[in-house]
Image (cartoon, rainbow, N blue to C red; front, side, top):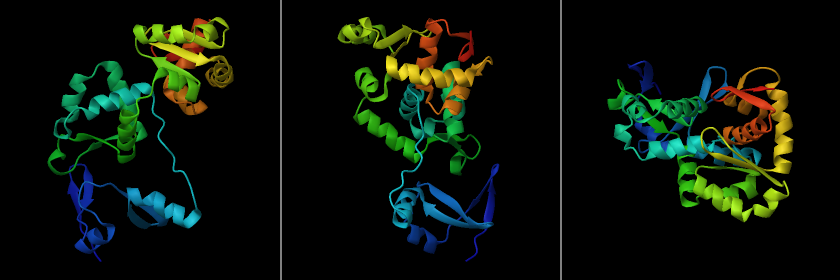
Length: 255
């Protein structure tokens, strides 16, 4: 079965024969995955079928999940409020500040967001949220995570406003006075809190990673396998304790 390949902008595209479309159950708009079976030979599958097939072949296996920070989730929610047809990069970038554009760049590098350049968007491109991240986004919208639940579940939390921080401080007053909960207000006006045990454990990993070099949050996150929110909590508490210095925005060095 032969398929012709066409040039579309800077990309290549092909039209799937009706027989393949029917066998895959495609209706348009889905994402498909290509897997190299052996050098030069590829299998094509719908993304939603991948996990099912792996389970059938090798049993239960959890596919890698994208670790997303609170800043990234916030940006994704903002992007999701914009109609798909209006998510042209030029239009979206005008609505974002420099920090948000940096977060968006990280999401693109992670594959959570891509610039789709097909059909009528071949020249302009359009921001598209990946299927798995979109599902995660919808789940978190249904079950909003509170700072209390994040602290209990993850060992840390990032609080966006002073009113919420004051409420949490009142609830955890005893634990804070005993030193069981650590917290600090960052230069970005967010509040970073953590359980002492969690902080002590993660602090050692971060120290080994940073050393005497200037390291960005993204680099530290990648090397310690902590998501960026967790890294920021550790670094902000370390900064308050005089263990690191933020030499430029988002970049730290041991004192």
